[in-house]
Image 1 (tube, rainbow, N blue to C red):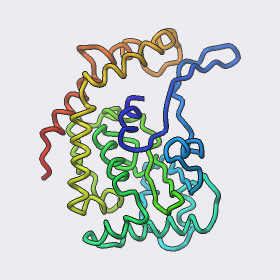
Image 2 (cartoon, one colour):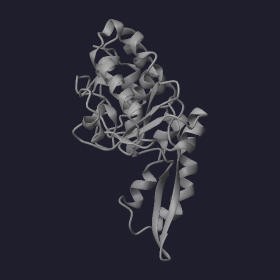
Image 3 (spheres, rainbow, N blue to C red):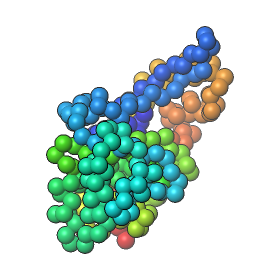
Length: 274
């Protein structure tokens, strides 16, 4: 939820809320309810319902990293799940996007990508992922994200699964915003190899740290959500984490979330690219 609140300031992001699940009259507790990546989302976020949509499911081996896999559509079908009309033209556009991204020299890449990729949106997407240390997204696993090709032919990269942010996977608050830049994740490797794009990306990372990794800014977002679900969480016998840990999430002291956010902010605001 907190990730979503920050992310939607920078890139179209599915909305989330809480739902209380009851099965046969028995409460199963509070769950996060995520907006579907469908035409309703497109209408809300892009004022449009047409275009091609792909979901990139979770994959620890990064099989859908936007690598160029040749011209055979079959090589992409196993990695990208098309959620709109399945037609040859959409797949050919995806293949061409990956080819341009992977095979264009750095000094020509921005001009080549401009007609087919929302470059600034992609940089913002990458910056949010890294600033908030999302360990279940593109930079870590090259999976769990969505792609949308709008009617003008431009691709947009959209967050999907963000439950492993803020150190949830024991990532360090000192994770370098330029870490994991290698050829297995070409959206990062290729875009950030262009000096002007790398500087813009780092500017977004710093802006997020300055504006949003500030406990005084985040607590007014956290407290209403905490109050809303606290009664259900307290009595939930199926919850994955204990009640003490839930209460600690908004505490002024001995709060692991606050400790991580404070440390992350301090690191990013003092960061100097090597």
